[in-house]
Length: 240
Image 1 (cartoon, one colour):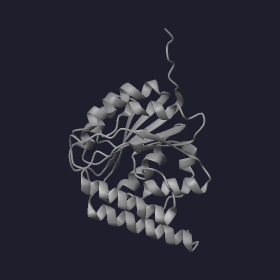
Image 2: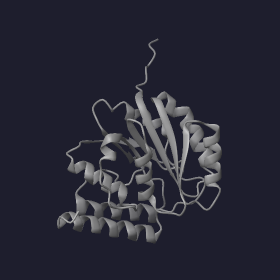
Image 3: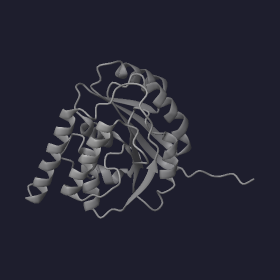
Image 4: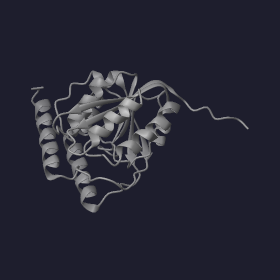
C-alpha cells in the first residue's frame, strides 16, 4: 500500500474573526490545532476579537496561555468585519494567510484541497456548494453579490465566502479603504486589478449550532453597500 503524502506549506498564518463566539471558540481552536500542523511546517493561529460582549476574549486568552501557536488581538469596541480582516492581515507573519469565520460552519480539513493548489495559484477562494442559511440571509447575500458585480465586475461564485487562502505578500501590499462587510470584496477587486488569477474550490457549509449570526443586520448591509459605492466613485473619478 502506497502512503499518500499530503502537501505542506512552509508557513501559514490563520486568523479567525470573533464576535460573541464563546460557545464555538474552544471547539474551533481544538480543530485548528489538530488539522493545521498537517498542512504547514510553521503556523500561527490568530484570534481577532472584535469587541465581544460575552466571554469570547476571556476564552481566547485562556487558549493563548495554553497553546504557544495561539495569539489574541482584540478591538476594544466592535469595529466591523472589514476592520477585523485588516487587523488579521497586518499581524500575520507567515508566507500564506488563511481566514475563516469562527462559527463552525466550515470544515477546516477542507483547507487541504486549497493547499494542494498553491504550486499553481496565489489566490484560492472557497465557494459554498449550498449555503446553510435561512431564506432572508441567502437573499441578502445574493442581492449584495449582484450589486458588487454591477460595480466592480469581480465575477466570482461566492463573493463573501469566508474560506480564503492567499499569499501574504499580495495582501500586505493592498491599499484597502473600506472597513465593513464589503472589505472582503474589495480585497478581491484590488487583487483582480493586479491581473491575478483566482482559483475557486467548492466547500461545504453547515448550519450554525451555537451563537447568533450578525451578517444579516440591516446596519451591516447598509454600511457595506455605502462603502462599496464610495470605493467605486473614488476609483471612477480617480480620487483614490
